[in-house]
Length: 495
Image 1 (cartoon, rainbow, N blue to C red):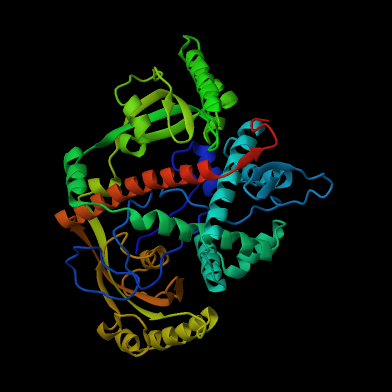
Image 2: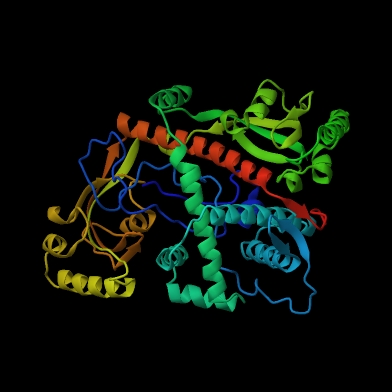
C-alpha cells in the first residue's frame, strides 16, 4: 500500500504551495493490500501496516484535493453581501461568497506563516481556478457513483487531527471557531475523499513501472552517488481554448487569434507573462502561464517535442495544437534537477519494532479500541509480556510472531505508525496510535545504521519513476476532465 500525499498542484511558487497545502489529508487504500514491495527479500508478511516503497518523504505527490484545519476567522459570514455567481461548472455554480471566503482563508494562512501575500487580483484569479478544478473533480467522482462511508470520513478526520497534533475534539472546536459548521466540514471532507478514490481508480491503478525504466533511471543518474538529476524545463504557455463543439470556422478564428498572440510574444520587448495573464485560458494564467519546472517526461508530448531543443528565453516558432486548443509556448528557463535524497544516501536507519493491533469497524468503535488498548498497555508496563499480549489480542498477521515486524526501513510503514515509532526510544511503548487499520500499541526494540542494498536502491528508483509517471498521468487526467467540463466565468479572473 503506497503512502499518498496530496496537493492541488505540484510545481508552484511558495505562496501557491501554501495556498493549496496548508494541511493535507493522508488517506490509504483498503487494509488488505500486500505488505512488502514486489521482490522484497525480508520475509513474507500478509497482513498489517506495510506499504509499497514510497517516493522520498518530501516529494509532492500528484495533485489531489486537500482538506485542512480552517484558520480562525477565515470563515466569517458575509451576510451583508449580495451573493452572486462568479462561475458555472457543469450543473453547479461557484458564488462570490465562496471565492472571497477561500481567498480570505489563504491570506490568513500566509500572514500566520509570515509569508508574502500576493496581490489580491492574482490571488482571486488563482483561487477561482482552483475552485473550478475542485468542482470538476468532485462532480466526476459523484458521476462515477463513488460512495464514502461515515467511517471513512471519521478516519480522514482522525488523520487531519493527528497531522496537526490535536485530538478529533480539538479539531472540531477549531473548525467551529473558524465559522464553519462541523456538518459542512464533514461534507466537504467526504467530497475530497470521493475524489481521492476516483484518482486511485482512474490514475494510480493504471500506472506501471517496468524494470527497463528503473535501469534507465539509475543509469541516467550515474548510479547511487549522482549529485544531480535530469534536466528540468520551465515552460510558459498561452492557451486559446477551443470548445468541444466548435465548428471549423470557429476553430480557424481561434487559431488565428493564437497566431496573433504568437507574433506579439515573438516581439523583442514582449512580456510573455503579461500576455498570458491577459489572454490565456490555461489554469496557469494567473502565474504568467508558467507551468513550473518539470522533467521532459512530465510535459505533454506536444510541449516536450516543441521545447526540448530550444534555448532558454525562446518562443516556440509555431502554434502548438492539442485537444484543448491552440498553445503559444515559451521555454522560460531550464536547470539540472536535484537527485532524490534517498537515492543518494548510502546509509539508512532501520528500526526493529513490534506491535499489537485492534481493528476498528462497525462492531468495534475507535473509542472502545483505544480503551481496550490502554488496558493492555497498563498490563504490559506493570510486568506483562508484550509478545504474549500480541499473540493473545492482536488482530494483525504478525500476532503469532509476538507482533514482530522485523527491521523496518524508512518509508515502509503507513505515516501514522512510522511517525509514532520514530518518536520512541528502544524499549519504550507508545500510547494507543490510530491508523486506517485500527488502533496500535507499538514497541521499538532496537535501531541500527545499515548500508542501502542494491535492492533498496532499486526500490527507491522504482518509487521515483512511479512518482514521475503518476504526475504525468494525473496532469493528463485533470486536463481531460477540465476539457470535457462546461465552465462559464461570470467575472474577469484577473479582477
